[in-house]
Amino acid sequence: MNDTEMNRSRRAALRTIGCTSLASLLPFAIAGCTWEQDPLEAIAERMVSMLFHPEQAKEIGLLYIAEDSVVQGQTYQKITGSLLERLGLEQSQLSAENMALIDERIESAVRQDFLDEDIIILRGWMLSRTEIMLCALAAVV
Amino acid sequence: MLIDAKELENGHVVEADICIVGAGAAGIPMGLALNGTNKKVVILESGGLGYDERTQSLYDGFNVGRETYPISHNRLRYFGGTTGHWAGHCRPFDAFDFSKRDWIPHSGWPITIEELEPYLEQTHPILDLGKYDYGSLPEYAEQLGLDLLPLQSDSLINVMKHQSTPTRFGPAYQPELEKSENVTVYLHSNVLELNANESASHVTSAEVAVIDGPRYKVKAKNFVLATGGLENARIMLLSNKSAANGLGNSHNLVGRFYTDHILVRPALDIALTRSDMNFGMYFGSHEINGGRVFSILTASEALTRREKLTRFRFHLYNTSPKYGSAIGGIFSGMDGAAEATPLNTERGNSVSVHMAMEPIPNPDTFVRLSDKRDFLGQQKLEVNWQVSNAEKANAHRAIEICALEFARMGYGRAYAPFLEKPDEWPSTFTSGKHHCGTTRMSDSPKTGVVDRNCRVFDVDNLYITGSSVFPTISHTNPTLNLIALALRLADHLKEKTG
Image (tube, rainbow over all chains, first blue to last red; front, side, top):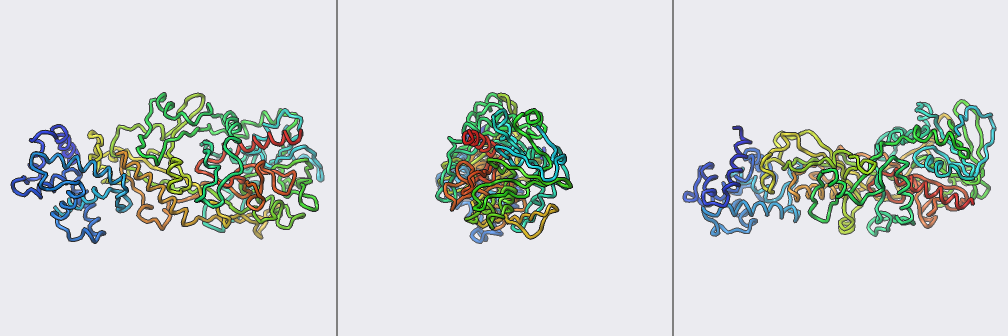
């Protein structure tokens, strides 16, 4: 199974069982971090798991960080906090059982970014602010 | 009837009710419309029945403004004119293209779409197009079993274009004009200038030269210039015996407002993030209702007015993947995209989007006579095409809107270098090869060269037809629209001459 197929398979699995409590545990197992160990890192990894090609997303994130002085030097905790804010979520609202909320919020945040024209142009690509912050997170997490 | 003017004697005089100069997209439909009437009509065509390098070279001139295609490459100088190599895309102007748009200086036609509508419909059989219908795109797509993009905002809209075969007017209409008893086409007849009375208010004759052949004269009650967006102005400027600045040029407007569509192709590439869309309606034309149609994207009137833009359109083309690790694929899951094909660009699923944009009328873009002469002794043209920063900003915004729309629909992410460097036109910027505006239509001689009936102000029997009379040019291709104007002018002349 190549990377693409693996990611597709993982996402398909998540979609299939996304509403169950088990679903929220799946990405942590893949990422190697649990809620009990570090909730914020678990949230960050959940966010990054939304990216189909994390390695490529990381490259994009590094490009963005290199060009945006505001993001430069930010830790994953800071970026995750900013993303939660964009998603209208407090860390206290999340638990191991309701992490799927992040997925839903990210989807709608991306759509809203494009509606609001809250976008970034990076190397000629038009990306939503939420997307590029996810890439930045992938680069530092 | 077709006559090769090489056979005429030097000093020969032809007499007619109506003399049309040019047998191309405008002149031939006029001839067809006047065929069978009681008018004696003469059509003067510079070329023969096919391409000839020497004749074509009479189009040679100079680009002295922004570099673009050599001006002799965009047109064809033989019977049938530029229809000999046109692409056949057809769509009429929209109603609001004719209106004065406060944010576009020098915009506004003196006529409305209603005045042109009957003639627009008549263009369809001439162009071998199907039923005259531009409003039933959703129904057509449904009948064809093809998708239309579910555009989600009030910015971009799907609109229909018709596809001509494309009809080559030379071979298509030679038989009909050959058989005509009242319309005579004189081949190899280059109009050098128009002679006018002392006050330059009435054209008396046209001076005609045949390459390596006789020179002769055509006397007519009415003259029509139908030689294209550049040569119409050139003949007016060359006709300077009675008026030093050229005929109809007392306000120094002949040749000014030269314009052309601004093209960026591709303007952007869309890396698709889903594969459940059949782009067939955009990628090629489809046979339906006796013709062929396809879909393009354009800005809604609401968007155009809200953002004070000029008109623009997008053509979509299938393209092979270019991006290796496509950003579009990385984000495919985040907008609810199809799970089955997460990285569509690996499968060749990307869309190349080409843009054509209406320019802003500008009196400082112009054509004028140069000091250099062609081998018939006529001054060649200089073409000064300029594009402004306002047009660049308009193009940038148009491309941004398209990129946003594909993202909003969840269909993909756009790659467009112009978005990152809005101060520089992208390398894919070019002109549309649609020469327009040099003898613009207006209600006042202070702002235009011809009146609402295409008659040159202050010259009672000289008319101009073709894209040179367009005061603004919308985003759409000119051919169908200029033919409608030519048919309208034919009706006007029938009425005028009784």
